[in-house]
Length: 355
Picture 1: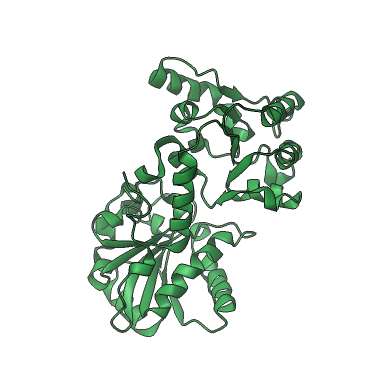
Picture 2: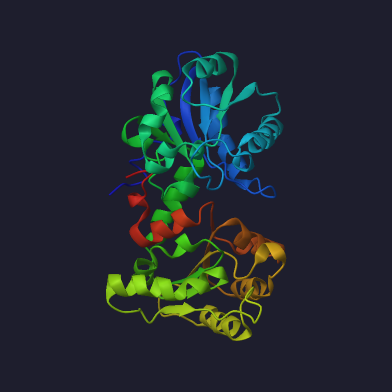
């Protein structure tokens, strides 16, 4: 079992000999309206710069086909935004560049020689990334002795840039260490009410195991439409459907929770448990981006009024609570959704980013 004390923080990285390059994996897959993940990365970036390193920043954006460049998935606009945020936070100009090919040795050498930070194009443009083939980074490894990982949001993936720690001397960024430790502490607790929403079906990949680790699991948002398929999988795994899984009914238009499901979930939140009372919420309960927020807002109000420990995974969920004045009610805000649920099911020590 991996303990947070056994993971080496970036604080333990040796002082660099001059401008020494280092591979840095960050969470770069961010919506235009939310810079939280980018800002979370700044302490690690700043620490590396202060200690003589030239970070080569790896990241991804959404899910391209992995067959080469696709303009809509380019990280270049994110790079420009991140550069602006970084310079404002550090109160100085940062000499940086953006490279489109991490396998071009000459291009990488030039970028390192002339810049403080090198940002790479979307690594998911390469098939090897999704396949977990770390040979994709063989050129970078010629330049870099160390690997620094600070991308909690994809820590549950078996992709090449996430499992690179298995063959390089690795240190973990400040945000990763903080959230990993919080997930370890939360995993030790029992009696959780888990609320799952949003649109990403992979939130349900480990539903059988999550149900075994929880008091109740309430499933809303678009996830409700996957009920039949998911239940077939659970029966294959467990032989039956656990009676603590509750599937929401949707409103007539299919874009929000029904009134009856809102009532059911409110009652679960208000119920005084005989075990530690913890609410884990990942994903909005309606089509949040298009204004279907009634169900999410009603549940938010109930949570704010409760005396529960509240752990949130995902930006939309946190935004709804903050907008209704419940910022102080959030005890743990995780930058990740999928990784958070993986950790809930199997323990953070089994995340591919550390295991």
